[in-house]
Amino acid sequence: MDLFSRYRQTQSVIMKSFFSLLILFSFKLLSAQHAQFYPTNWWAGMKWNKVQLLVRGENSLAGQNIKIAYPGISVINVHRLENPKYLALDLSISPSTKPGSVKIEFEKNGKKNTANWQIKPRRHGNGDTYAQGVQSSDFIYFLMPDRFSNGDPSNDKLPGMLDQSLNRDSIFYRHGGDLQGVINHLDYLQSLGVTTLWLTPVLENNMPDRTEHGYAITNHYKVEPRLGGDTAYLRLSDELHKRGMKLIKDAVYNHMGLYNFLMQDPPMKSWVHQWPEFTKPNYKEQTHFDPYASAQDKRKMADGWFTEQMPDLNQSNPYVANFLIQHALWCVEQFGVDGWRIDTYIYVDMPFMNRCNKALIDEYPKMTMVGESWVDATSNQAFFTRNIYDAKFKCNLPGTIDFQTLFHGIKPALTEPENGVMQMYQTLSNDFLYKNPMANVIFLDNHDMSRFFSVVKEDVKKQKMGIQWLLTERGIPQLYYGTEVLMKGISNPDGWVRLDFPGGWQGDKKNAFTGEGLTDDEKAIQELTGKLANFRKSSMALKTGRLMHYIPELGLYVYFRYNNNQTVMCVMNTSDTSRTVDFSKYAERTKGFSTARNVVTGEAMRMGEKVTISGTEMWVLELLK
Image: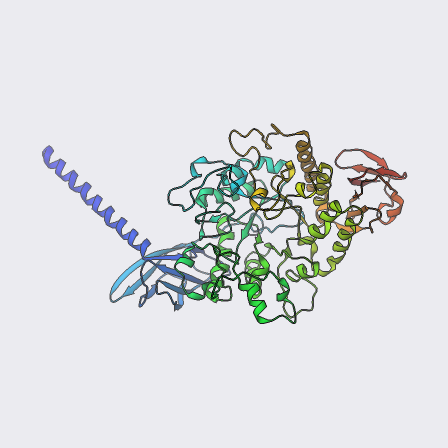
């Protein structure tokens, strides 16, 4: 064969290969465009093996016949929804089903299209290496990824995203923080004594503005690409678990972003709650349990929209309920989530929440979740978690975000001298309403309220007391990012309490990760937090011990955390005046001990003598024989 013939033969092979690849690519493109599936995949061996697959076509799916020929999977029902571009397929996945690619065939008038859906092998270590739950032995650090650290500047602005803002000088624009920035500073968090990380929602928020917070989800099955996408979130989960740390997901069941495809092109009108005109909730959680509440008031509380940019999801619609519950299960298995913080809990349909919580616990027995129940009474707050009430409806939520120990606890204790601490005593005395108050998350501040340092008028001594209380009180302590270095801000508007963590961006003059540029006070609070949190790691009395407290006298509040092997005595002087501490007054818990060692300073004091504690000071004392 001559050179020219060889050349032509080679070119022919190349062209055939090219056209084969082109046909294959076109076929795959056609398949990808023909239908999208939610959930995007499932797993072999799941207890939740009756999966409702929401199918979205690029064009109408009306009249399409659906076939699946895969061992162990059968189509139980095909629901044709109001919008002809959608179908809901009820699938049964037998325990014997093996992982693999499931071909789903769409046929109409003899024309066929196929699309692939995956069955994956399950994660190993349910309850041991993931889905571990979050308990009182943990210490949660809560941060906003966009405002914590920029680890990958290449994803700060991405083509095609509606919000192209990037300006650290504005409290309302994106600043560029991401998941890689969090990963880069896990050493810092671990050295601070943190065991668990809670981030504001990381799912896609492709909205025109205010996308820094994450609460307006536009695609439930896609991690926000400006945070690093699915890959970065999975990497963060893996890095946490390698260190023996945990990951909490911030779940938003109540609403979604206006630009979510489920709103722009909804499967049915009732996917969201409908009103003749924009209607807000009445913000009265009492309608959930008030025996005299009107149906109109109940509906407005549960079905109102927070903003016109966040449509209110209709969880009483069974298709919506299945979509949200399956997404929750999907997130745990896909990313190795350990616990849940549930946003705006009191605004969601309660029977749905019970069903969702049960599905998670059935699949992941050690899984825990806490709800954001922002109310103004312990009795009201207890309703939304496991409680002792003989009520018509019983919530099954394991724990709650404990607003009461903030609003009627540590806040008045430090801002209303002498009498304020009595509110803390009274609030804690109501713990009998909960089945397990140790499952509640206690905190000083968060992304929606004024920072604690500003609440106590930038009084460093009171900030110290707040942190010592946080790390010694019953429940699960949660620290908002920057509280340990005296970040301040008033929440009107909310952007002032969501400022950048110092040192998270290249060129920052102040760096809390290294200590560079911090004031002496900032260093002192940071050191206090780390010292006490790390002591707490090895203190079973503080992590899981019982609580006993004494009625406050003249602003002096004494409480004990204890078990059979350890006793920690906490002395809180909330007044401006020095007080005398007589250990014999607390003989129920001090008897048999001779020495009290200050956990923070290392100072030891003899318990047979009366001692003086300065005004606005707190001691955390380990009692020794």
